[in-house]
Image (cartoon, rainbow, N blue to C red; front, side, top):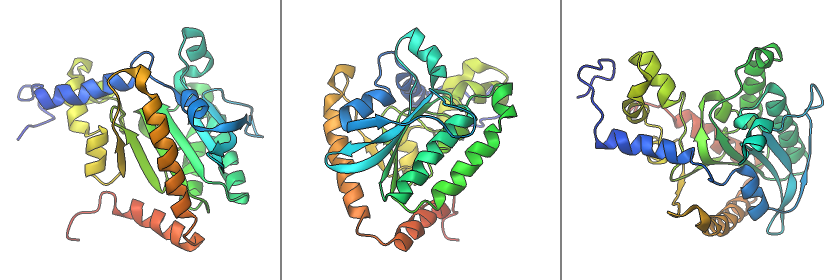
Length: 279
């Protein structure tokens, strides 16, 4: 058995390389971003801005639209494609006002009985001093609490990176779906390697140890569904068509549940995570 704390006996094997390859694919240039999913899945989309507290956060796009003919609320972390867009969007790292903006839209969705789609793609929440001054930790914590008891269906879709609390702040959902080459982890492989081995070059070993791939997360009961990806990024239209039907069917089934049933199922989903088998 490998000892992940001893770099002298832990060398990257083929499974390590595969795990890190998926991490790198999740960050690939030209990969569809949150806005691309909105443009291809949602019709009549109206973007809504601001958290009614501090301001607007361009790292997250929120608004209402239609999934087929079903009114939905969409919250999508947006990284941008060009360098100019990435800087504007803060590379998909949300500030506290971004999480508050998202929560404001979730509460409106609850009020008008609209299902919520969260599209996650972030290396993590912004960790600058100004974010801490404006209550980054509190903003994320409030999202976790409110999403657990939100009285409307929620699906969180991981389309790329899923870093730490930045991703978790939009992932307390009835269903977590992941694209094949997305990941979801408490820390990046590079960060983990720097802490465990004092060597960021051990990121391949770290990626395997963290069990952060979509397949790992499904095995652990954290993700319910894995979406197979085409080899060519230009062929993502197939993904959009598939997701449109999948989301519509999921929300149609959710409407058959009472609010109490919906909340109990969500609660039980998270209670089961990390439970020791047999206890």
